[in-house]
View 1 (cartoon, rainbow, N blue to C red):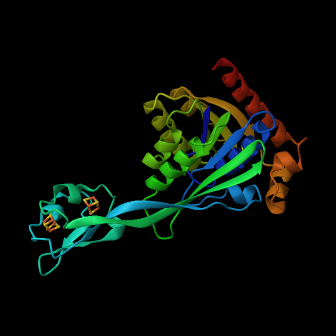
View 2: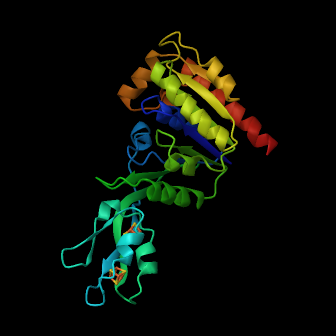
View 3: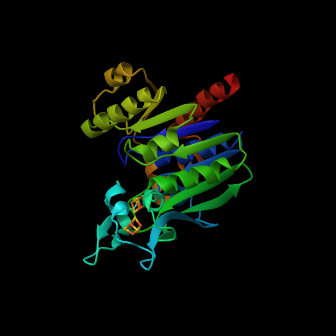
Length: 289
Ligand code: SF4
Ligand code: SF4
């Protein structure tokens, strides 16, 4: 079963929810936690473990053989990303960071062998075994790389290649296709938010995306006692459900400082009980499917 933890904005505690939930579920199920927040993966830090078993994520880029190029310019015209410029002499020249790797240039080029295969590194995936019941797959973008989608897909592919009861995805912030790629096929989507105007605004964005994908959101309000701002009407409007409110607590703060997840360090604390209650809701879904 696929579960996704997401949130419109960064810094809401999405990774804290994902890691603590993964640890709680791993008491009973075989869980693969997938850190798909490829711009800033931090689940391994919260779990005090290392990124291991690196695999490179590569993307096609064209390599020109100018001895075969007739300077017709078709590739430049057809590149939807405007990644090809014309040299003064008339030859195409690639701006690698703009290239999506779509291969259109190669397909439309009338001269055989004028555009050859080359690749650039856009990211990495990692695999770390934490215990018999908990494995972590992480996606990480190459420094300076802007295209996150291929790395999210590679992490997703690597994780889904591992047989498990639960694949728990921790997405990037936002509502772009990199988030949709992680959310796709989820049985349960947990949207983490906080009671701030920005939190409310971004929650609405993610609820709209989930509506489009025909998915119901379970909303977790983190730092719920930070203000009186209510999420009720917005959650109701999009047919979601607030399943938990996590107040600020000393135990969570101390667990951050000590680098040990709260469900491990303070299993009897209120936040740990809340994670157990979310895990129970997930168990109910598992029992129906
Ligand atoms: S692979 Fe696609 S994006 Fe890259 S240069 Fe060719 S047409 Fe443009
Ligand atoms: S389409 Fe082929 S032949 Fe034409 S400019 Fe591009 S590389 Fe050269």
